[in-house]
Image (cartoon, rainbow, N blue to C red; front, side, top):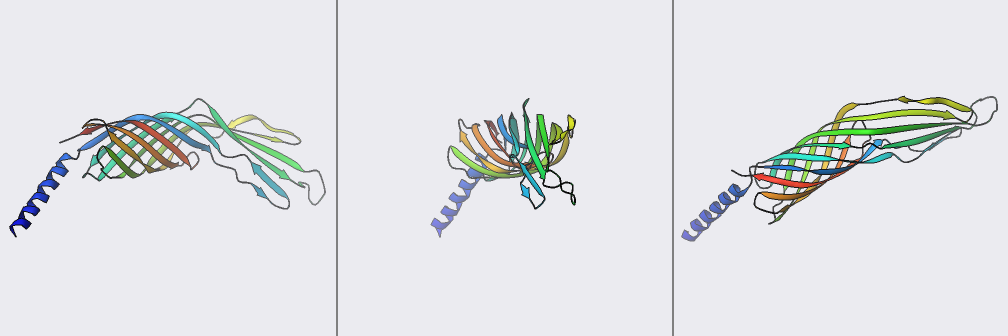
Length: 230
């Protein structure tokens, strides 16, 4: 019985030390690369009278920043607030071609082809996310996973031009949208490598989805973490 009480006391002491060693909060700041689907994909379609074809979705690589603050409940669970911004001076575009086999039905005539080009340029995208984070402490290396939800504000200049086989339908591109705010979500994880007791190097990878652009994005971030202790 005496040995059992000693074992219980020893375990409790270790748990107290374990909890006290957990940082109170973690502040992350780093650079980030985002591969964004600025224009949704155009799936092909064909029927007896109409054929629609297009190139793949308009994706663009963006450079930016990523920062977060995580408040730790214990060594394996925390609640994180994540913000990021992505920018580029480049542009991307998608082209959709619609071919109507007999636009003059019931009278027979030559096929008509209409080509629509949509361009997205100079994107500025910001994400504001928060959610739970689950860690697995393992010495100097600590992997974790998180599920974040929030909002996305995208400022993207979009234009559309339409041409037909019989001539130009719309020669001057029309601006479709310059800014929008909607729901966003990030699912992913990271690996922390402890440099010093309170200084950590972090590598993050996430799948992102958001309204206002396409729905399939990827981001990779890296930077330093400062651990705040009691």
